[in-house]
Image (tube, rainbow, N blue to C red; front, top):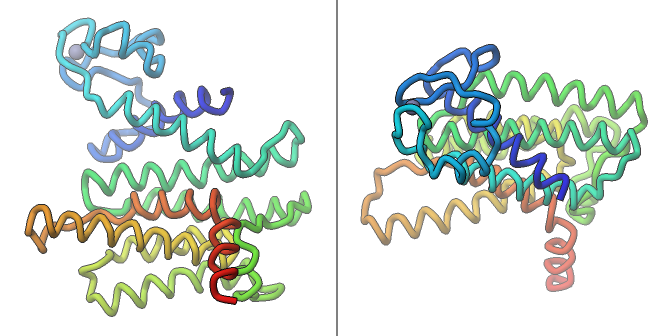
Length: 268
Ligand SMILES: [Zn+2]
């Protein structure tokens, strides 16, 4: 429950960051305001979900409707933060808290990238840069505090074992897979931005887990792609891929262990 509520507030923050990035506004040091009338919002108008319900989905001043995007993003973030804490089995042990915070930043960056992609079909380089910095810090912190790498799909990690150079190789390994897809599909399937995101995944995940995340993302993306082609008969319409990377990565962390077990039981 704590993580769900944490997620609601985080969702509100991340939604605002994404909106401001989309409009190219200063996203760190400006106060939230109503997108219709520009009135600066008070603290009690910024409570996730509750403000929306009490104001009946309208701005207090100009009575314009507030987009459903706000409560949806907040509730969704509540769920994924809860699932993340659940799968990491986060406790109050300081080491776990540090680890959880790093994963929280990692998923938050992916999430904002996904929101941004949905609106603009682009990948924001500022976020990638911030993510890579955080990833490097995370790996330094892991060394310093002796945090062991997380192993979600251990059979795949066992197959793709890069030994002691794992942290260095994994980002290049994962991004080269997407670079290959990018080159084969001539940039029609995915964009170059997705290649950069794969690099980011490699800073936070082990090679097997990252690979599973990419497989799951492509699988989900293909299903949605086929659905849109059948429904709209429009082959040219681009489909943003980052939301699928976000879901695929969350899926790999949640189900990595059971998925690889099922797969290898089936094969052997
Ligand atoms: Zn207003």
